Image (cartoon, rainbow, N blue to C red; front, side):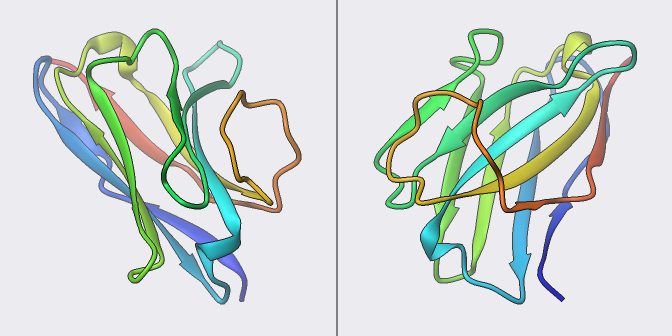
Length: 125
């Protein structure tokens, strides 16, 4: 089965850290840029970060710059989102998505071949 699977979410206190993983099953991530999205209750989905096929191009939403870091390990067929200094407003369901021919990251409005099922991140004291 061709799918993306997110892991690493959960409950964390403000100021804490989490590392999300996005693992591909049944296909290789070598040909895809990977994007993290999030959707909070009552809000529209927003792009959080993107990493290109080579890993040489990354972008971040202004709200997470300096706190989140995206990376990829193609040998493990996995992309990571390291989230530090978490704030209550980071609370959302986080999704990863695979964009074919993603040689460069320049935005989030693209067609995606695969989506993960989503994982909850809750930042609360």
